[in-house]
Length: 131
Image (cartoon, rainbow, N blue to C red; front, side):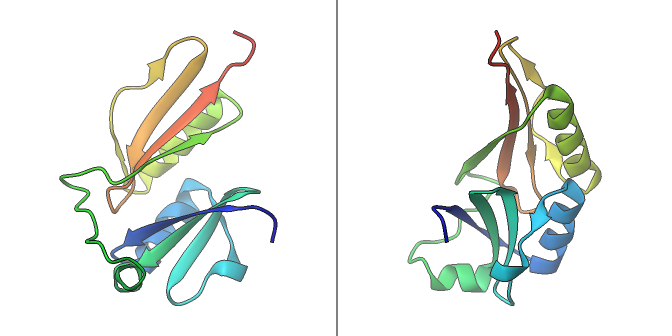
C-alpha cells in the first residue's frame, strides 16, 4: 500500500453512517471495510474509517469525545471548485447532517462546514490558486 492517511472516527451505527457518507458521495472502499469498520476514499491517499464505537474503544485508552459538547477533530477536504463545495455540503445536509455556519468566501478561498450524524465536523473548501 502506498503512503495513505487513514482517519478513524467512532460512529454509533455503522450502517446508518455508511448510508450517510454514500449519500454525501464518498467512494466506499470495500477492501478495507468489514464488520468493525466502513471505509471511504476521500481521495487516492486519504481514507475515512468509520469504526463502531465498541471497536474504537478497543484501540484507544481514551474516552470517546461527546461531539455535542466538544470538538475532537476538524476534517478539512479540498475540492476542485465552489460548485463542488456547495454540492457536497448540500448532499450532507439532505442526508441528515447539519450546516455549522454560513459559507465563507474570502475570494481566494471558499468554504462551507457541516456536522455528520455523529457530530464530527467537516470543512469543505476550494482554494483559488489564481488569486
